[in-house]
Image (cartoon, rainbow, N blue to C red; front, side, top):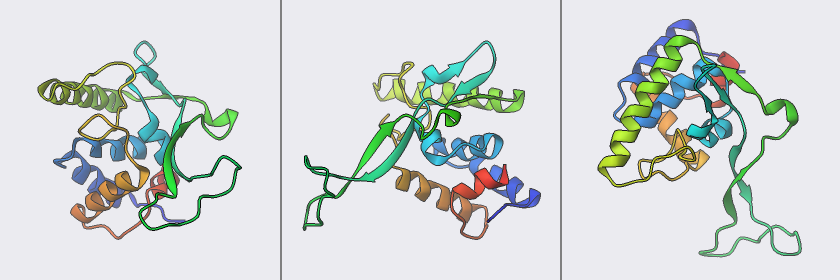
Length: 172
């Protein structure tokens, strides 16, 4: 199991904070909460509880194998997608939970919200409670593989060895 040292966490936090890619804040969020990648990119602004400074895990985003109408896996064919992005409930009842956010993380999330809202306004993108928190600059939900690419770029900027995103959960 890969776990980041305190020094490596600080380097990654610094690289994510200084990233030109706004959703890199999700890396800091994950280091501070231990959420899974699918949960992170599934969060919507409506999942935030302003009174208790918490966030509720209600959905997860994943890339799954496509199945046909008979329930069989779609066979590989040239030019034909065999996987698709699926948004669904977390895998178990215990995965559906409310996560308290400590003050520094809450403040960072609210600053992130302000920057995201300004960016969306500038491009005429609707911003509301169903907007994904950690989404593409277009407002569309991230493909988990695409967010992993952002994570890899941030690791490289921090001059850290290649690890997978789930190591942040283990580190938490």
